[in-house]
Image (cartoon, rainbow, N blue to C red; front, top):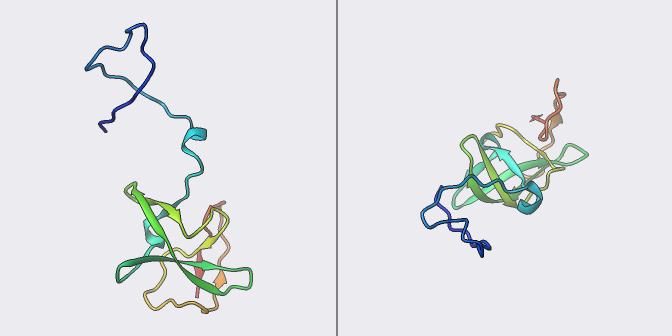
Length: 115
């Protein structure tokens, strides 16, 4: 990735054309919410995800997708890290559908929900 940085260089230790490895602390990046690509529902020009509430009722939410990391994507708005997002939602999924949340064998940020 090619980037341009502005840094203090009063001692001329950084020369033009120099290469460097830069590590940005997570604190500087802020909170990053990512979801697996198999949670995204593409309908027309919008992208949605299915979120399950405490009563097992589905709510479809529009999300704004940021960077694509290959098998997961950054979510800029629409869900929070505490939401229960449906993995592999069917094309017929609608708001108001009642689902049962399946138990998972290992801790996961997004539990799977099944009809």
